[in-house]
Image (cartoon, rainbow, N blue to C red; front, side):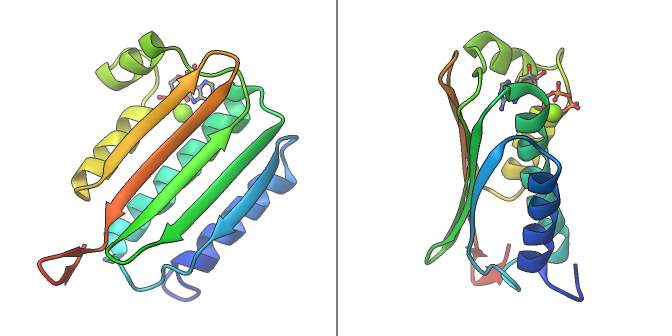
Length: 142
Ligand SMILES: Nc1ncnc2c1ncn2[C@@H]1O[C@H](COP(=O)(O)OP(=O)(O)OP(=O)(O)O)[C@@H](O)[C@H]1O
Ligand SMILES: [Mg+2]
């Protein structure tokens, strides 16, 4: 990560997943090097990795979309699929404990960075996860 930067590291990881998956992903990653402390770069990496892994593991999707947009004082991450969706109850379970660790960890990482995570999902219509992470806290790196 430190040698090639977060942006390239993310693009490579995503490319690898795309190559080995039947889901066809549209990918758009803005340059986001040197905006975050290294620990938060790792958090961002894990968040994106988990959301893509969930699509390949659970969604039964044909198409997916991964976008990272750099805005003035935040980045916006959007991960979308057209798969089977997640019921509200399942999302609740995932956040409270019983089901896996992935979504709960994701939420925890986002919270740690003072970000916002929202899951928009309808059964059989796919899932969209939107995450906004602020870049600056009191003039310091997040
Ligand atoms: N993109 C998705 N489409 C459909 N279902 C999903 C999607 N992402 C998650 N899910 C459902 O939500 C549940 C919880 O996801 P979570 O990532 O927390 O756990 P997991 O993937 O089952 O296990 P782990 O992440 O610990 O390996 C999953 O078991 C799956 O049923
Ligand atoms: Mg998971």
